[in-house]
Image (cartoon, rainbow, N blue to C red):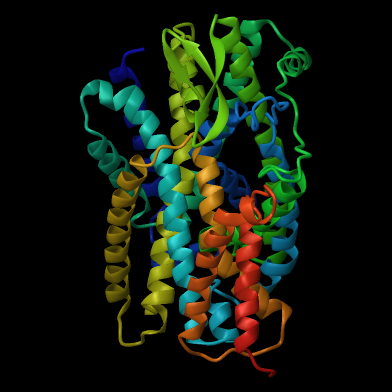
Length: 512
């Protein structure tokens, strides 16, 4: 299909979002932007959060991860990502019954106000600053992945430079979140999640139909190609199943329960009971949807085999991974799904390309718009403290909020260009690695506040401990194979980071 035709569908999709944003942002104010006036429907929030959690990374990177074979000569741990998903589910239960009751009890607009009430201003500012860093890195990595796909398969063929592609997408996101904030995002996320899951199901259905397979037959075909193994039992491996499950649980606690973007939507629900229903419903659906993405990954490899592609093992980021070879090209990892859906094998019908692009954009925006809004909210409330400024009028607060929104968009732009310089076989691996470093201090701070009754001195030492812990983790992770007889530290780096922060805070704490 011609790139210009796909571009028309992208433009049409943006127009639909603007219509929804215009309708939902009527009579909006700062409270609408920050927490949706605490009047969001829990079912809409739960469904929309699926899109926020999955994002374009899941849509592209999880199917591609099926080709990550691990050690040369080992049985492929093709569905190993599901180990992390099991951990996610356990983590959501902790968020629902430990963190949400705390946030509602304190009636928080920013969850980092808890740190201020518990320890003082330095803990509060440190926590908010690490959230801003964490969410900026994670959101821009997700944005880069999807914009890069759009650029390679559509915009570059129209001779549009990459930086222009990034600028246009960010301007679109800015425009439909500028006024309504959370109040608008609850509805746009619901729309986008619907389109994303619909696209996923249609792509699976088409491949099954094309290969003349039932789901059971497809799973049997994947098993014959060693594409159905979930659990990795190599204790020294980065993908060891206990590491992945426990690490996944803590990733959820940190990246959802201690993340202003995710909690901003949850605490916009009317009451705690509905918010907990939202969290549990969302977690069950999320497990099922991730299974569908992994099934799609296996089907894509079967489809490529069927179309005459051959497979070889290549090294990316120092790790062996499968690549299918067609017309002299090696396609692997994050490029697998878009390459097939957009016609590399020249057998996919045009309507699949259209559905893929719409679903991909739908996967992109729930994570991007929510991140931009949450970062704006956190910087305004936690760093600038505009809610506590009686000297500022509502109009002045609104102007400040809009200025911060623009600055955050510019930071996104610069960060995406930086990610373009980083070559990786899988962005989802990079995001999980980075999360361990940036969310670890947040995990340590909140754990210390919830699990102990000790006080901290309200000074710069808190921030210093939060900065030193990730540095120590980096040194430990880098040297672990030499120190621990080949043991590789993976996703559990988040737990180690949080524990180091916790122990550091313990050394400077005092009894109440």
